[in-house]
Image: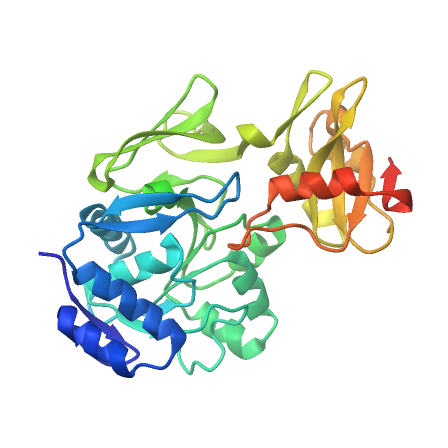
Length: 366
């Protein structure tokens, strides 16, 4: 039988009837979403309908077995050493797997859930640090802007960060945190994360380690293949280009196959180029492409600004980083806002479309 009892903001609710009764009187929208999920969890349907973020295509529905979600929760709870009575901050949307899995972990392990509205400031109004929290980078950055919120975030014993890349500047700050901070690797299809990499302490670095029960390999395309029967994933070949540490099951992500720009036969991973230049870019940006008669596609940097601004010396950066000079962006376009999905990931199709539509002095050759 699935666990059916949970502590939500200090109120213990159990069973299908308990969740139904709580829904009759609850007025907080976020708590209502948790209660609705728990009510369905207690029902006879063996599956939960999940929604992908749409970061690499059209959002879609996925039907996940509740037993598989429970197995995923168990892998995380055991890896992080979470115990009954530990507090868990829920500040991610319940529309997506990340928020739902916080609830499933709480149901499984007896965690006490603290429900906050999904916002840039998840620690606002709290008086003490939760034991466990799952955030996206945008929330981490915003919390660092307020001393009280930063102190609360630093006090989290097990902090996992996912949904988007953690840039080098943020990683340098997180390395100084006194407790465990992890970057997660996973997707809706794998029921949240299947691997973690440390962002804090002496072991902080680029390498992810799979959770127990997860087997990883490399496809003929150089992409990551995931096998995890316990979470109902016999085999998934991802579009992430990876490199395994020699003689180890640890891996690092170099970029996505579908985000590789073929420019005159040179393959340029957009994410890898973004990582290389990020520390010297003064404003938000993304790497994309524009059609080119000679090259097929020309590497382009899309910059969040309503007017042209000075950009760094990309050629010098590439030389310093030991990367090919052919990765240098040939064009810059300036847009009011870099396109993102609802979950905060780069909307690659929207980014490329905005680049193609740029006109006048908002489109420049480099």
